[in-house]
Length: 608
Image 1 (spheres, rainbow, N blue to C red):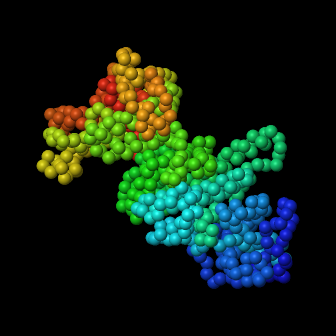
Image 2: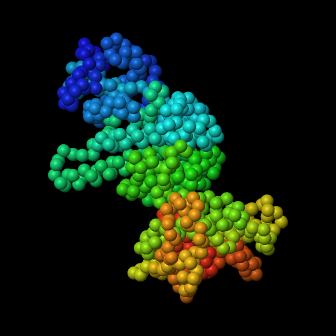
């Protein structure tokens, strides 16, 4: 840019609010431009980035490193002018602005050609280290480097309620992510409270300042206002909708940032594309764990550390991630509520969890126990207790909610009755159960609440000789299809009150212990609403397929062994009496003998 005599720093730019104006007019002669640019300075195709040092002794920034962002296209210039407007708007809260946003100092004085619109606009903003947050996370030694940069002193740990030092890698990473996420949310909330949304929150636009140890949310060139100046009532209603929509958009971006920070596998573009595709297809983000588990179990640089962090504290991390990425914008969590979420609060802070968080924790703990596949007497008692407590806290007890949530594919995790699998038996033939699914679908051309119900049990016939070590074999599938009507029903908590009910909850341990206190239950209800499942026994279709040809006698033995290893309710669907718990990710059904079947929603068919 051509240089002209540098005027004194502006004290009141035209159009600025009353009082000193933070926008400073510079001249190119005020800078010494470096011959290189840090890799972490993110720029677009219509921007040119330069690092420079202020050499004007009269400037408050004398000797400081700044960034000169040369904006060439009309759209880029608009972003630059918008960043200056936001700076003027936030002038009365400069300390918060400087702490949580990348500080814009001003712009280079335009030449005559620039005044005619032919030359680029040069924006002058702060320099906050060589790396963006994305580049930090891509370093092989990112954890100790970021810990040293943030200098985890007493003030830092106080902000997250965690004064521990060192520890296992999972604990250290969780502590660091809490610091980064809390700073990021405070900065985004600062913008939202001043009537603006960032709209460009990405890892490339987030920097960590080694000076004040704060996260900077990038240049606010695309920040948008929530409100128009039209005072009409229709405009007010439109502004409220616009505000909710823009806040929800920012929170979704924060969710993507959190996902990449915790799950390092998502830093790979192809894996992240699968992640986004899963959400874009309308799948509920509360089912992310089941979808990502096969990906996270593969060999990767970070192993399963991200999975362990999200699973801690009864799956609180998955809960926060689901709230940030909720499909419906009005269901997404706000910055203030996210800052109070148990996942972002250290052990020094005592947080009273909501009933929704308690319900989520119960389900997550039951899933983790079922995945361990250690079904001793103690584990079985705990699982039965968690399932019964979930039934008491069922958030969707009405028949309408069951009809809305039931359609889909559900994977059987655990049954309080019969164990799933071979256990200690050595039958002939050796059959290994892979997965058991229950699929509900709306019956075609049906006006009544009738659903098509299909049970799919996958199995493998292993070789007789070396089956403990060789799990290969012929794959097969047993399928049972029927129809069922969903009607209102009730289940009784006391056996003497429910003589007519074939399925009862008999546990009396709800009101004691940690979970009972967290659920804030003073008295156990006498009965609970359920969804009765009335199966049409006259319309049942059973089929079995196998990868190899079997004789009739062998096929009967295989069928008998599959039935022996699976709960009877998965073969004889008429033994399913009612549903006692359902949400977007988990479901509990009760059998005629009182056993409970725990299912998790499966989205494997939607994997790209």
